[in-house]
Length: 330
Figure 1 (cartoon, rainbow, N blue to C red):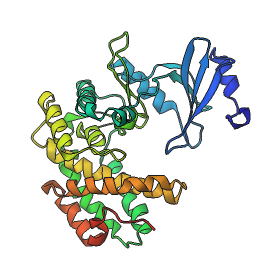
Figure 2 (spheres, rainbow, N blue to C red):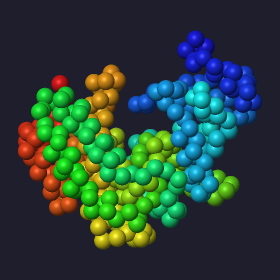
Figure 3 (cartoon, helix red, strand yellow):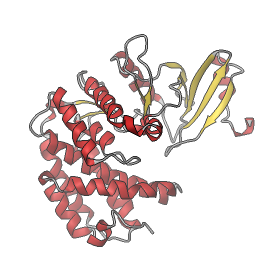
């Protein structure tokens, strides 16, 4: 198996005090990152390989340390060589929330309640030292739909009016930055590990895949959790979890409107990303998620706050495509 391992892995582990460790590759995700479980004697850890120039592990290290300093359950960093792409981290095991729910569907309400509570705790912390989730970022992400999905569907969409509609829709949210928090940006059932509390009292929800954290609106990560691209979350559960969050959060009167705004923005982005993963990166398995994402997008578009964007979709995306929740990409 050694010929399948990245060059430099033995040297890094040796310098980190893990020389001679058994190395077990773990199936990858949608990025260029690779993961390995390593074990030596009675110690076990997770090794991330995020090689430049495609990846940069420095943001992961930065966010992980901030989260741990603020009593959130991010993995401890044991050793790192960011310039070469290596990070040795605490092993959170295999108990992902998604997998646990597949085996224990009766525990859905409890698991989502705990996940919402973890977000609520995060939102009591001052926003971290991260870049802002501003209009430029929102627009760039939303544009992925017209850049990748529409061409794949042979739709000649008006990209200029699309971005204008988003600017009008998101302007009220961007104009009120008082409720800014750390936004993990990919907080969902596949990125939550179910653990016991650690000795320092950090919570039982292990956080992973947070390297793209920004400072933005607290509704964003709720959308990520409750409008999950990879797992069905019923509208009833979504509503109950929103109510649970609002019962303990200092939310303003516009929170639900902003939840819909960010839901539509995120779902439009994801449709574009999944189309790009297929077209550019040769990963067609993500196409099967698009109908679920499109269905959530349609629900968000029904909110009055989305009127400009909803009008654009009515004009530019044929109804027969939308009625089939995005259609079959060809």
